[in-house]
Image (cartoon, rainbow, N blue to C red; front, side, top):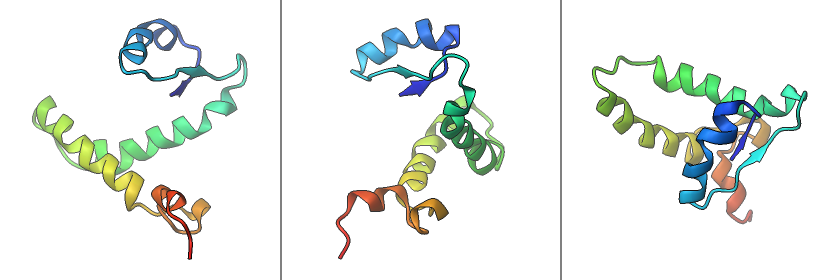
Amino acid sequence: MITDNAWAYRFSLREICTTHDITQKFIKPHCPWQNGKVERFNRTLQTEWAYRQIFLTNTDRSTALAPWLEHYNTERRRSALGDRPPTARLQPTS
């Protein structure tokens, strides 16, 4: 996981990352453009999932996230990947 250097990311997430054996990396100080991929993902998450429907409870919201992430990683096509989903990079091309 790559994050910026905000206090919440440097300290609050440390225990969670350690618990789940996640390597935490940080962008270089004073280089916010390195965080562009995260910012783009957050914008897509907001427009295609969070604000696309009304969630009546946090449980409903949490339940809807996993299927959306599955779609995002396995079906949603990216122009930067030749109109293929990210998982297509894991499969050998014929």
